[in-house]
Image (tube, rainbow, N blue to C red; front, side, top):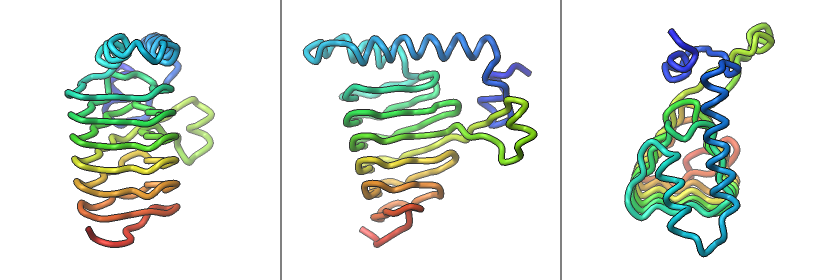
Length: 183
């Protein structure tokens, strides 16, 4: 099994693998190009996002700057908007539903490292998929950690650290993020 297959299967893998290094470099080149376009060059910006991401719905807009690891693990639904400084560490699948709004300075992190230092010393890491449902609003400065699912219609308050699943139809906030009330 290749290191890429291990990565996608949520197993320990070596990110220093030559294939993965090349794929990250390709994605970073596209992110660099995207982030350095003139604001008026909207068509080129959308072209790069379509080239970079695995799936892009209609009416998708990401304000620069935007960074990701691979891009091909990212699926964006229809009517997606992200404000400035979105970071997606997509060593695993990131699925974002329709009508999702994200504030500035948000991070979606499928990547993580082993707790055991012996494994970290070997350069091993792993990732777990993240799913964000439909009609979700995520405030600014939110971190979404590996393996999390956020249910449809949820609202995540600014500054939250989402490390556990959030059900549908709730307002949740905090560090760690917790349900405050139902909608």
